[in-house]
Length: 490
Image (cartoon, rainbow, N blue to C red):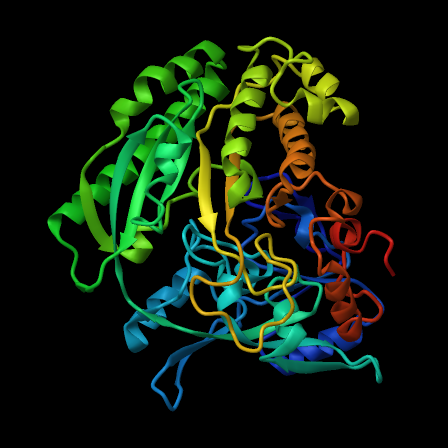
């Protein structure tokens, strides 16, 4: 009997009837043919919080597909060919060793597999998601004419745009190919800002920056970041000391403090005091340090079990969205009175019943983690959270182009039981979708249904059609995919 599969956050648990770990493409195709009338999903690093992986029939572990190779075009462009089950951390190490290059976009963690990162459009700040940069996919799926499993190679057209973020609904990713970038360093300076306007003002000069809304202080800390024009292979002493400080004070110290306050002492008063008077003293401000990109842009985000919802809003909505988040969190905390008809967002929420709901939820949850804002450029994909929905371009979009950018706003909880946070997350998801044309990260906590997102992805119907071409029987779809992507559209 197979063992239960549990995700990193502990909120997803299931036991499949069949578990496979194929070693080559022939074995993958045999698995697909064997279960062509069942349900099949792929398991990666389990670092997602949505039930996108859940399948009680067949689970395929692709960890043995971990090869990394280099291919050079005639013009000298370096491309990587990476097995779908290879962890990002391993990809980085091998690319450094093979060609002194790196991947074009980095998320906060490197434990994820590359296929898992692509399938949910994992992103960092200041660039497109990793999905956007994929030039070619080798995917095992089904031939609609014969019903037999086969390997598809997509390097152009709508199939490529669909595969760039498909939540596993287009088959099993065997390998991907993408253009590498030279290794580079990033300079970082942490500064305090009193308003979101001040934080956003640094966008042009520091395109890789991300910032945090500090609860109960309602000001911002900004990690001003930009790529350096030259690369130094060896780190200096300042960089080593900075990373040691970050690991001890932030990765460990901050999170231990939060766990103590909210899980052991369970004190709302202490939580508010910490953010108003203590956190600022822990932050090393106005000191500029440069280091390798994967050291500055990555955090040890996986050290402590937590749960996260991430909500994307268009750039032109981010100021209003930040004000809304601040006001909602104060009501949930009980620090603000129940919202009435004069509340700033009352006119928009009252007609849909959410104003009364917010009043009922007053005082039920104290947010105990800073809220992260990251700017993500629009993706050349059909249903990534930052897809622009434009028709297929005649050629891949250049770096930095592709429609309007989005801001990803992250909410994290370390408290268990999680029901109060679920109520907050559900309220934010439903209200911000209506108010700000928001989209939810496919791989994070996802309390919405297909009807809730129907108007936010203009090319969703086209994505469904591509999926049916390679999976006419819905083998790669699970309950989550049916609920949020297909929603009765058979």
